[in-house]
Image 1 (cartoon, rainbow, N blue to C red):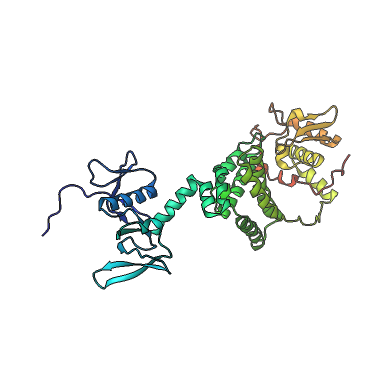
Image 2: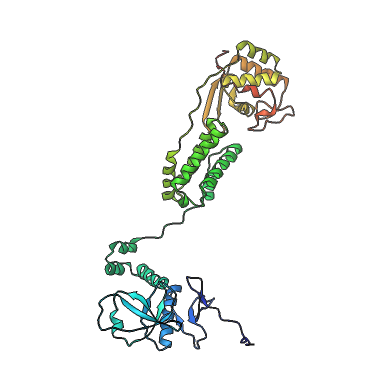
Length: 403
C-alpha cells in the first residue's frame, strides 16, 4: 500500500472548464498567482487568464521546450511539430499516442514565422478559452490597436465608452414615491403600495434596467385579464395602471436613474385604460328623502343635509371642522384631504338650522362639527361608524332640491 505524503495537498487554480490547473496556485491575501512548490516562488502578473497564459509559457521554458504555442479547441496536450520547408495547404502536426502511434491533427492553415526558425520539438497546446482571454485583454487595454490590426474600426470606439450607472431597484423607486411631501391618506398609500408590488412581481425585475417591453405588455394584459375574469370595475384597471405611471413619474422628477425611468415610462405608453360605464342614475324621490330625514335623529339629519348640500362623502362630513363653516355668511371653505384642492360652498338655510339644532342638543368642544356618541371625532376614512351615515353618499342626487 502506498503511503500518502505528509502535509496538506496543494490548492490549484481552477480553469474555465472547472478543472484544476495543476502547478498554478494563488495567494489568498495578495491575490498573486505563482507556480506551486517553487522556491523562491515564480510569480505571474495580471488577472486569472493572463496568469494562465504566462504560467504555460513558464512551464514550457522550465521543461526546455520552445515557448511557442499552438491553439486547439480541445483539451491541452503535448505534441511534436515538424517544420516543413514549404506550405502548400493545411498544416498537420503529429500527436504522440502510445496506443495507435502517430495520429494527424489539424492545427492551422499556415505556419507562423517564429515557428519556421525554431527547432522541431515539443509544443504545448492551450485551450481556446485561453486564446480568447488574451484577445479580450488586448481589446480592453488597446482597443484602437486591435481595431487597426483587425480592420474593425468599431472596436476602437470602446475608448470613449463609459461604464453605465447602476440602475435603481424597483423597491427604491417606490420609496421615493412613498416619501413624497404631498400628504395622502393611509388608505391610498396602502392601496398604491399593493398596486406597485403587483407590477414588480409581474415584470419579475429587480431594477429598472431589467424591465423589457414584453414585461410591461404582460403586466398590462394580466390586469385586463383579471378584470374580465373576475368581472371587476373600470377602477380596477385604471387605479393600477395610473399608480404605476405616477410612481415612475415622481421618481423622474427627483432625478433618479433618469434614462431608465424615461425608457420604462415610454414603455407604459401602451397602457389602455378602461372607459367608465355610462351614468344611469336612479335618484331617490324627494318624498322618500323627506321621510328619511324625518326619521333620522337630530345629529344624523344634520349630517345628511350637510352631505347633500356640499356634495360630500360620508368621511368628509365626519371630518368637517368648525373653522370651515361661517353661519353668518352662509359659506363653507375647506380643502380636500386627498388632493389639497380648495372647496367652497353655499350653505342652505335648512342645513344651517339642522346643524345649530344639533349643536344645541349635543354641545361639545371638539374641533370637528360632528362627533360620536362618546364625544370623540370620527376616524378619518371610516364613514361606516353609523349605519345612517352610509346613505349620505348622494352624488347621484341633485343638490338643488332645497334652497
